[in-house]
Length: 147
Image 1 (cartoon, one colour):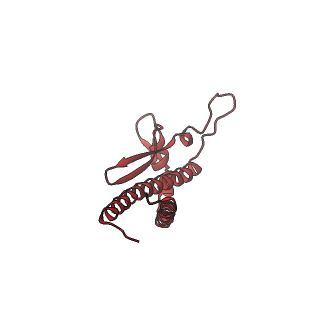
Image 2 (tube, rainbow, N blue to C red):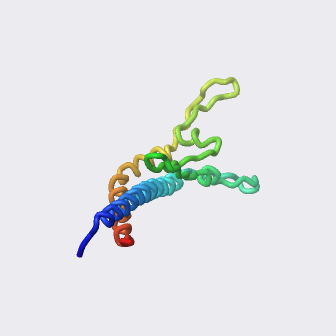
Image 3 (cartoon, rainbow, N blue to C red):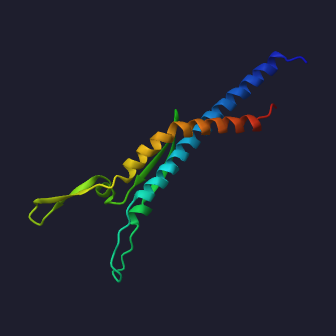
């Protein structure tokens, strides 16, 4: 079998396209996968307000407020977990209790839902990234065909 120079150049171009596709796919899958795991664990740790019957108030606003957002960057992909509920930082990090005279009379400890979950996810991130990278490359090779 003969392989001409043109075929080698064409093969090289196909390999470069595959390389870029794999990089993009891996970055996106790892970022989104870790963000999804972080979101799940953070929601599980988020407290739900308890209100007396008849008040019309329903707990869970803070828990429902957790969201993720993915963003493609020039050198990769970034996924963020965030909560825009107004009082989220006070529950996460804690806050002072101030009386009507402005004097601090106590402190409510933070629940650290996101902080603790981030620490837990950091422990599994490398293994998750390696497994996802391996799986993505394996799928790309299995689906790849020379034209």
